Amino acid sequence: METSGKKVINEIDTKTRIFNVAARLISQKGYHAVSMRQISEQSGVSKPTIYYYFNSKEGLFRQLFDSAIAYSDAQLNEIMKREISVKQKLVELIKARFQQTLTYPDFAKFFLHLFIFIEESPLSEQFHSEAIVRREILVRLIQEGIDKKEFGLSVKTPVAVEIIIGTLIHFIAQQLVNPRRILSDQLAEEIIEVLFKGLNE
Image 1 (cartoon, rainbow, N blue to C red):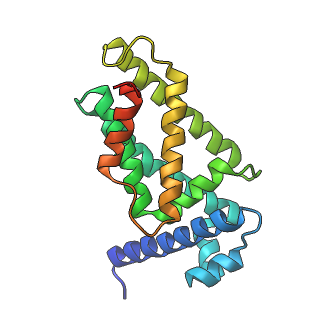
Image 2 (cartoon, one colour):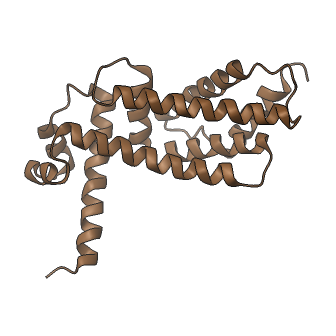
């Protein structure tokens, strides 16, 4: 008879396997083209077990999304609490996103799909709401840097935010299709250095 601890571990392992397959499939095919049968076949988990854990395809994708967001939020909150400069917080945020991509590439593909492709799904509204929240965090962080005189008064905050987001997406997308490692802590530092020094130095 399994102990309760082993049951919990087995449940986490099973859900993680389902999540990885679901994330990969939706990034390849889109939400509507993915079936529970495909997820079952590719994860090696029976359909009744998947329905037991998630009730429905929508329930599965919502839990997948919520789990990834919770993980990201925990990292974000930890970085924001550090007693470091605003510039260094931006570097650490980029490092964290790079590490997430390297550690969980299927999840990175999943979110890249949601960001780039316009597809109506149960996740659409929630994803765009989360994207707005994260943009606002970057806006406030850069404004804090201006207020503390870390950045110049001429910084165009909305443009700086879009440059950071666009640069992140570019390098993450490059990494996801390239077997060679591209993402690194050094690259994260160089991105922020170039952004805030400008091209004249």
